[in-house]
Length: 374
Image (tube, rainbow, N blue to C red; front, top):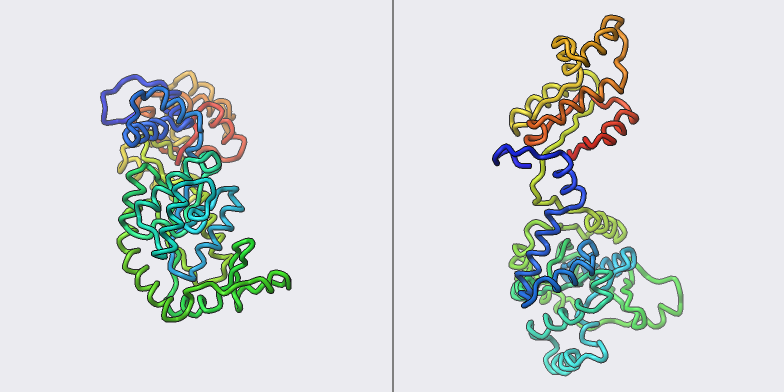
Protein backbone atom coordinates (compact mmCIF):
# COMPACT_ATOMS: atom_id res chain seq x y z
CA UNK A 1 0.00 0.00 0.00
CA UNK A 2 2.98 2.32 0.52
CA UNK A 3 5.15 3.28 -2.46
CA UNK A 4 8.25 3.47 -0.24
CA UNK A 5 8.13 -0.22 0.62
CA UNK A 6 9.23 -3.17 -1.48
CA UNK A 7 7.08 -3.57 -4.61
CA UNK A 8 4.92 -6.45 -3.47
CA UNK A 9 2.03 -7.42 -5.73
CA UNK A 10 -0.92 -6.22 -3.68
CA UNK A 11 -4.43 -6.90 -4.97
CA UNK A 12 -6.43 -3.65 -5.15
CA UNK A 13 -9.10 -5.19 -2.92
CA UNK A 14 -6.75 -5.25 0.08
CA UNK A 15 -6.17 -1.50 0.58
CA UNK A 16 -9.78 -0.80 -0.34
CA UNK A 17 -10.97 -3.20 2.34
CA UNK A 18 -8.69 -1.57 4.91
CA UNK A 19 -10.01 1.90 4.09
CA UNK A 20 -13.66 0.84 3.90
CA UNK A 21 -13.69 -0.90 7.27
CA UNK A 22 -11.21 1.45 9.01
CA UNK A 23 -8.88 -1.41 9.88
CA UNK A 24 -5.96 0.89 10.75
CA UNK A 25 -8.06 2.95 13.19
CA UNK A 26 -9.45 -0.25 14.71
CA UNK A 27 -5.99 -1.67 15.36
CA UNK A 28 -4.72 1.68 16.66
CA UNK A 29 -7.64 1.95 19.08
CA UNK A 30 -7.16 -1.58 20.38
CA UNK A 31 -3.45 -0.96 20.94
CA UNK A 32 -4.20 2.27 22.83
CA UNK A 33 -6.68 0.48 25.11
CA UNK A 34 -4.19 -2.30 25.83
CA UNK A 35 -1.42 0.14 26.75
CA UNK A 36 -3.71 2.28 28.91
CA UNK A 37 -5.46 -0.50 30.85
CA UNK A 38 -2.69 -3.15 30.68
CA UNK A 39 -5.00 -6.13 31.30
CA UNK A 40 -3.43 -9.37 32.52
CA UNK A 41 -5.35 -11.31 29.89
CA UNK A 42 -5.49 -9.16 26.71
CA UNK A 43 -7.72 -11.40 24.57
CA UNK A 44 -10.90 -11.29 26.73
CA UNK A 45 -10.28 -7.58 27.30
CA UNK A 46 -10.14 -6.89 23.55
CA UNK A 47 -13.22 -9.01 22.91
CA UNK A 48 -15.13 -7.05 25.54
CA UNK A 49 -13.89 -3.76 24.10
CA UNK A 50 -14.93 -4.69 20.55
CA UNK A 51 -18.36 -5.86 21.73
CA UNK A 52 -19.02 -2.41 23.20
CA UNK A 53 -18.83 -1.01 19.65
CA UNK A 54 -18.75 2.57 20.96
CA UNK A 55 -15.78 4.11 19.17
CA UNK A 56 -18.07 6.52 17.30
CA UNK A 57 -20.38 7.65 20.11
CA UNK A 58 -20.12 11.31 21.20
CA UNK A 59 -17.13 12.02 23.42
CA UNK A 60 -17.15 15.77 23.78
CA UNK A 61 -15.60 18.36 26.08
CA UNK A 62 -17.11 21.86 26.21
CA UNK A 63 -15.07 24.58 27.88
CA UNK A 64 -15.63 28.28 28.24
CA UNK A 65 -15.64 31.18 30.69
CA UNK A 66 -18.57 31.93 33.02
CA UNK A 67 -21.73 33.09 31.16
CA UNK A 68 -20.38 31.93 27.79
CA UNK A 69 -23.35 29.57 27.45
CA UNK A 70 -21.43 26.30 27.62
CA UNK A 71 -24.05 24.56 29.79
CA UNK A 72 -26.86 25.59 27.45
CA UNK A 73 -24.92 24.37 24.40
CA UNK A 74 -23.99 21.16 26.20
CA UNK A 75 -27.63 20.47 27.10
CA UNK A 76 -28.82 21.14 23.54
CA UNK A 77 -26.13 18.86 22.14
CA UNK A 78 -27.12 16.13 24.58
CA UNK A 79 -30.74 16.31 23.45
CA UNK A 80 -29.83 16.35 19.77
CA UNK A 81 -27.25 13.54 20.00
CA UNK A 82 -29.14 11.50 22.66
CA UNK A 83 -26.01 11.55 24.79
CA UNK A 84 -25.26 12.05 28.51
CA UNK A 85 -24.39 15.38 30.12
CA UNK A 86 -21.70 15.19 32.80
CA UNK A 87 -21.51 18.20 35.13
CA UNK A 88 -19.75 18.69 38.46
CA UNK A 89 -23.06 19.44 40.20
CA UNK A 90 -24.66 16.23 38.93
CA UNK A 91 -21.63 14.15 39.88
CA UNK A 92 -21.78 15.42 43.44
CA UNK A 93 -25.56 14.90 43.70
CA UNK A 94 -25.51 11.27 42.54
CA UNK A 95 -27.20 8.75 44.79
CA UNK A 96 -25.93 5.27 45.64
CA UNK A 97 -22.32 6.37 45.18
CA UNK A 98 -19.91 6.39 48.09
CA UNK A 99 -17.58 8.65 46.12
CA UNK A 100 -20.37 11.18 45.59
CA UNK A 101 -21.18 11.11 49.30
CA UNK A 102 -17.55 11.91 50.13
CA UNK A 103 -17.60 14.63 47.47
CA UNK A 104 -20.75 16.24 48.92
CA UNK A 105 -19.23 16.47 52.38
CA UNK A 106 -16.03 17.94 51.01
CA UNK A 107 -17.90 20.41 48.80
CA UNK A 108 -20.07 21.62 51.68
CA UNK A 109 -16.92 22.51 53.63
CA UNK A 110 -14.60 23.79 50.91
CA UNK A 111 -17.03 24.82 48.11
CA UNK A 112 -14.80 22.99 45.61
CA UNK A 113 -13.47 19.49 44.95
CA UNK A 114 -9.87 18.31 44.84
CA UNK A 115 -8.85 17.23 41.35
CA UNK A 116 -8.22 13.61 42.32
CA UNK A 117 -11.73 13.22 43.73
CA UNK A 118 -13.34 14.93 40.74
CA UNK A 119 -11.52 12.71 38.27
CA UNK A 120 -12.54 9.59 40.21
CA UNK A 121 -16.17 10.73 40.04
CA UNK A 122 -15.85 11.25 36.27
CA UNK A 123 -14.22 7.85 35.81
CA UNK A 124 -16.98 6.16 37.80
CA UNK A 125 -19.69 7.92 35.78
CA UNK A 126 -18.19 7.22 32.36
CA UNK A 127 -17.92 3.50 33.12
CA UNK A 128 -21.69 3.21 33.46
CA UNK A 129 -23.70 1.53 30.72
CA UNK A 130 -25.48 4.62 29.38
CA UNK A 131 -22.22 6.52 28.90
CA UNK A 132 -20.58 3.53 27.22
CA UNK A 133 -23.53 3.04 24.88
CA UNK A 134 -24.54 6.66 24.13
CA UNK A 135 -21.39 8.63 24.85
CA UNK A 136 -20.88 11.69 27.03
CA UNK A 137 -20.41 15.46 27.07
CA UNK A 138 -18.23 16.97 29.81
CA UNK A 139 -19.47 20.45 30.74
CA UNK A 140 -16.64 22.69 31.95
CA UNK A 141 -14.33 19.76 32.72
CA UNK A 142 -11.32 19.77 32.88
CA UNK A 143 -10.91 23.01 34.80
CA UNK A 144 -7.09 22.89 35.02
CA UNK A 145 -4.18 21.38 33.11
CA UNK A 146 -3.62 18.98 36.00
CA UNK A 147 -7.14 17.61 35.52
CA UNK A 148 -6.67 17.39 31.73
CA UNK A 149 -3.53 15.28 32.15
CA UNK A 150 -5.17 13.08 34.79
CA UNK A 151 -8.11 12.44 32.46
CA UNK A 152 -5.76 11.53 29.61
CA UNK A 153 -3.77 9.18 31.84
CA UNK A 154 -6.97 7.24 32.59
CA UNK A 155 -7.59 6.77 28.87
CA UNK A 156 -10.56 9.16 28.76
CA UNK A 157 -10.02 10.72 25.35
CA UNK A 158 -12.55 13.14 23.85
CA UNK A 159 -13.07 13.12 20.10
CA UNK A 160 -14.07 16.80 19.99
CA UNK A 161 -13.20 19.74 22.26
CA UNK A 162 -15.17 22.99 21.96
CA UNK A 163 -14.02 26.22 23.57
CA UNK A 164 -16.48 29.11 23.71
CA UNK A 165 -15.01 32.60 23.69
CA UNK A 166 -16.38 36.12 24.25
CA UNK A 167 -15.12 39.50 25.58
CA UNK A 168 -15.06 39.76 29.37
CA UNK A 169 -17.27 42.86 29.34
CA UNK A 170 -19.97 40.93 27.47
CA UNK A 171 -19.69 37.98 29.85
CA UNK A 172 -19.97 40.13 32.98
CA UNK A 173 -23.08 41.88 31.66
CA UNK A 174 -24.58 38.58 30.53
CA UNK A 175 -23.94 36.89 33.88
CA UNK A 176 -25.88 39.50 35.83
CA UNK A 177 -29.13 38.47 34.10
CA UNK A 178 -28.64 34.73 34.51
CA UNK A 179 -31.50 32.71 36.03
CA UNK A 180 -31.88 28.95 36.66
CA UNK A 181 -34.93 26.71 36.68
CA UNK A 182 -34.39 24.49 39.77
CA UNK A 183 -36.57 21.71 38.34
CA UNK A 184 -35.06 21.28 34.87
CA UNK A 185 -31.72 23.05 35.45
CA UNK A 186 -32.40 24.99 32.24
CA UNK A 187 -30.66 28.36 32.14
CA UNK A 188 -32.54 31.54 31.21
CA UNK A 189 -31.69 35.22 30.93
CA UNK A 190 -33.67 38.30 31.85
CA UNK A 191 -32.78 39.99 28.54
CA UNK A 192 -31.85 37.34 25.98
CA UNK A 193 -33.90 34.28 26.90
CA UNK A 194 -36.85 35.00 29.18
CA UNK A 195 -39.42 32.14 29.35
CA UNK A 196 -42.93 32.80 28.09
CA UNK A 197 -44.59 30.38 30.57
CA UNK A 198 -45.55 32.06 33.85
CA UNK A 199 -44.99 28.83 35.84
CA UNK A 200 -41.37 28.72 34.77
CA UNK A 201 -40.83 32.44 35.40
CA UNK A 202 -42.22 32.15 38.92
CA UNK A 203 -39.84 29.39 39.96
CA UNK A 204 -36.65 30.82 38.44
CA UNK A 205 -33.83 31.44 40.90
CA UNK A 206 -30.89 33.79 40.93
CA UNK A 207 -27.74 31.63 41.08
CA UNK A 208 -25.02 32.47 43.52
CA UNK A 209 -21.72 34.05 42.51
CA UNK A 210 -22.97 36.17 39.60
CA UNK A 211 -22.08 39.61 40.91
CA UNK A 212 -19.75 41.72 38.78
CA UNK A 213 -16.86 41.35 41.22
CA UNK A 214 -17.34 37.58 41.58
CA UNK A 215 -17.63 37.12 37.80
CA UNK A 216 -14.45 39.14 37.21
CA UNK A 217 -12.60 36.94 39.71
CA UNK A 218 -13.82 33.75 37.99
CA UNK A 219 -12.86 35.11 34.59
CA UNK A 220 -9.34 35.87 35.79
CA UNK A 221 -8.99 32.31 37.10
CA UNK A 222 -10.42 30.86 33.89
CA UNK A 223 -8.01 32.76 31.63
CA UNK A 224 -5.10 31.65 33.80
CA UNK A 225 -6.09 28.00 33.45
CA UNK A 226 -7.39 27.77 29.87
CA UNK A 227 -4.08 28.72 28.22
CA UNK A 228 -2.51 25.69 29.92
CA UNK A 229 -5.38 23.33 29.07
CA UNK A 230 -5.59 23.99 25.32
CA UNK A 231 -2.18 22.43 24.41
CA UNK A 232 -3.51 19.10 25.70
CA UNK A 233 -5.97 18.95 22.76
CA UNK A 234 -4.02 20.23 19.74
CA UNK A 235 -5.81 18.44 16.87
CA UNK A 236 -9.39 18.13 18.14
CA UNK A 237 -10.01 21.68 19.32
CA UNK A 238 -12.42 24.28 17.92
CA UNK A 239 -12.90 27.79 19.30
CA UNK A 240 -16.36 29.27 18.72
CA UNK A 241 -17.31 32.90 19.22
CA UNK A 242 -20.03 32.93 21.90
CA UNK A 243 -20.87 36.62 21.38
CA UNK A 244 -23.65 35.78 18.92
CA UNK A 245 -27.14 34.27 19.13
CA UNK A 246 -27.13 31.02 21.07
CA UNK A 247 -28.75 29.14 18.18
CA UNK A 248 -25.86 30.11 15.89
CA UNK A 249 -23.34 28.93 18.47
CA UNK A 250 -25.22 25.64 18.80
CA UNK A 251 -25.27 24.92 15.07
CA UNK A 252 -21.56 25.66 14.76
CA UNK A 253 -20.88 23.29 17.67
CA UNK A 254 -23.19 20.63 16.23
CA UNK A 255 -21.56 20.82 12.80
CA UNK A 256 -18.14 20.39 14.38
CA UNK A 257 -18.97 17.40 16.59
CA UNK A 258 -20.57 15.62 13.63
CA UNK A 259 -17.40 15.83 11.55
CA UNK A 260 -14.77 13.10 11.52
CA UNK A 261 -11.16 14.09 12.04
CA UNK A 262 -8.71 13.15 9.32
CA UNK A 263 -7.34 9.71 10.00
CA UNK A 264 -3.63 8.97 10.49
CA UNK A 265 -4.09 5.73 8.57
CA UNK A 266 -1.79 5.21 5.60
CA UNK A 267 -3.71 5.18 2.35
CA UNK A 268 -3.13 5.07 -1.39
CA UNK A 269 -4.37 8.34 -2.94
CA UNK A 270 -7.10 7.92 -5.56
CA UNK A 271 -7.81 11.45 -6.74
CA UNK A 272 -10.59 12.48 -9.10
CA UNK A 273 -10.39 15.91 -10.75
CA UNK A 274 -13.64 17.33 -12.11
CA UNK A 275 -14.29 20.58 -13.89
CA UNK A 276 -15.52 22.18 -17.14
CA UNK A 277 -13.47 22.38 -20.31
CA UNK A 278 -10.60 24.85 -19.95
CA UNK A 279 -10.64 24.82 -16.13
CA UNK A 280 -7.08 23.48 -15.90
CA UNK A 281 -7.70 19.86 -14.93
CA UNK A 282 -4.78 18.54 -16.98
CA UNK A 283 -2.32 21.04 -15.51
CA UNK A 284 -3.45 20.41 -11.93
CA UNK A 285 -3.31 16.64 -12.48
CA UNK A 286 0.25 16.91 -13.79
CA UNK A 287 1.28 19.03 -10.78
CA UNK A 288 -0.33 16.62 -8.30
CA UNK A 289 1.24 13.61 -10.00
CA UNK A 290 4.66 15.27 -9.91
CA UNK A 291 4.46 16.42 -6.30
CA UNK A 292 3.01 13.25 -4.77
CA UNK A 293 4.36 10.62 -7.15
CA UNK A 294 0.93 9.63 -8.48
CA UNK A 295 0.07 8.04 -11.81
CA UNK A 296 -1.48 10.67 -14.08
CA UNK A 297 -4.46 9.04 -15.80
CA UNK A 298 -5.98 11.16 -18.59
CA UNK A 299 -8.96 9.29 -20.01
CA UNK A 300 -8.82 10.87 -23.46
CA UNK A 301 -5.08 10.31 -23.72
CA UNK A 302 -5.51 6.67 -22.72
CA UNK A 303 -7.93 6.11 -25.59
CA UNK A 304 -5.54 7.75 -28.07
CA UNK A 305 -2.64 5.62 -26.81
CA UNK A 306 -4.72 2.46 -27.17
CA UNK A 307 -5.38 3.34 -30.83
CA UNK A 308 -1.73 4.25 -31.46
CA UNK A 309 -0.53 0.97 -29.94
CA UNK A 310 -2.99 -0.96 -32.12
CA UNK A 311 -4.10 -2.93 -29.07
CA UNK A 312 -7.29 -4.97 -28.98
CA UNK A 313 -9.04 -2.05 -27.27
CA UNK A 314 -7.56 0.29 -29.86
CA UNK A 315 -9.19 -1.71 -32.62
CA UNK A 316 -12.55 -1.24 -30.91
CA UNK A 317 -11.98 2.48 -30.42
CA UNK A 318 -10.62 3.28 -33.92
CA UNK A 319 -13.99 3.25 -35.76
CA UNK A 320 -15.49 5.73 -33.30
CA UNK A 321 -12.51 8.08 -33.72
CA UNK A 322 -12.81 7.89 -37.50
CA UNK A 323 -16.51 8.73 -37.40
CA UNK A 324 -15.92 11.36 -34.66
CA UNK A 325 -18.40 9.58 -32.42
CA UNK A 326 -18.35 9.19 -28.64
CA UNK A 327 -16.65 6.01 -27.48
CA UNK A 328 -19.14 3.79 -25.56
CA UNK A 329 -18.80 3.80 -21.79
CA UNK A 330 -18.28 0.02 -21.73
CA UNK A 331 -15.12 0.31 -23.84
CA UNK A 332 -13.82 3.30 -21.88
CA UNK A 333 -14.30 1.38 -18.62
CA UNK A 334 -12.30 -1.57 -19.96
CA UNK A 335 -9.41 0.72 -20.89
CA UNK A 336 -9.55 2.54 -17.56
CA UNK A 337 -9.86 -0.69 -15.59
CA UNK A 338 -6.79 -2.09 -17.29
CA UNK A 339 -4.73 1.04 -16.48
CA UNK A 340 -5.91 1.50 -12.89
CA UNK A 341 -5.29 -2.19 -12.14
CA UNK A 342 -1.61 -1.99 -13.07
CA UNK A 343 0.86 -2.30 -10.24
CA UNK A 344 2.12 1.30 -10.32
CA UNK A 345 -1.44 2.62 -9.91
CA UNK A 346 -2.10 0.26 -7.01
CA UNK A 347 1.14 1.12 -5.20
CA UNK A 348 1.52 4.83 -5.90
CA UNK A 349 -2.10 5.84 -6.37
CA UNK A 350 -3.55 7.84 -9.23
CA UNK A 351 -5.10 11.11 -10.28
CA UNK A 352 -7.88 10.69 -12.84
CA UNK A 353 -9.35 13.39 -15.08
CA UNK A 354 -11.57 13.39 -18.14
CA UNK A 355 -13.83 10.70 -16.66
CA UNK A 356 -16.51 10.35 -15.33
CA UNK A 357 -18.57 13.03 -17.08
CA UNK A 358 -21.99 12.07 -15.72
CA UNK A 359 -23.59 10.20 -12.84
CA UNK A 360 -23.94 6.90 -14.73
CA UNK A 361 -20.23 6.88 -15.51
CA UNK A 362 -19.46 7.63 -11.85
CA UNK A 363 -21.56 4.65 -10.77
CA UNK A 364 -19.73 2.45 -13.30
CA UNK A 365 -16.37 3.56 -11.92
CA UNK A 366 -17.44 2.79 -8.35
CA UNK A 367 -18.94 -0.57 -9.32
CA UNK A 368 -15.55 -1.74 -10.61
CA UNK A 369 -13.89 -0.89 -7.30
CA UNK A 370 -12.14 2.33 -8.32
CA UNK A 371 -13.78 4.68 -5.82
CA UNK A 372 -11.78 7.90 -5.44
CA UNK A 373 -10.89 8.90 -1.88
CA UNK A 374 -9.98 12.46 -2.68
